Image (cartoon, rainbow, N blue to C red):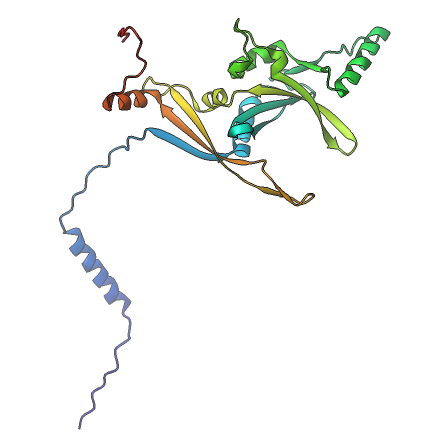
Length: 263
């Protein structure tokens, strides 16, 4: 009786395998296919996923090259998840090519008794929260005018700077504090300055902000989560796209009561 060897041949031949793969590839290439040229996707909305701290760093890149006394910015989530944005200045040496943002209301060059008493009274009043030690320069007011929130404008179109600007102190090193000047700015106006306000097709960009969830950082001193950073979704919509889409579905944009055609 003869014995049949049923042991499979496990020998691997790389050249044979490569040739087989190449043959299969050529066979696949001969198959009929529909290969259209990809069209540009007609996106209505551009989105940017970020967080409040990352966005604050981008805001710093807008204002820091302009002002020598610029300290930084802060985006806070306040009541009803509304966003509040502020930029900060501190008194420090001027830098060439940059504007001075704040100046002391006390004349430091005047060494008279009257001026020293005035300075002392101002400082004591400041500590109780009643007076201010600094004011914005005229250059700073002019440069920041386009970023001031609308609710700080008077009926005559002028800015109520007394409500826009606040002062406070923070600890720099143990037992030493520094005065800062806080200026409220409109985050939407800042976004338009950074990312643009007009589209290439003649429309304008509208920005929408959506506050998602807090990114909690543990505070080891009090063993509680502190929400000082939030997830943000920034959406940008082209006004022309909105008008086209509205017309497509039968909605009328920018209509007037008299039905006057203005185009």
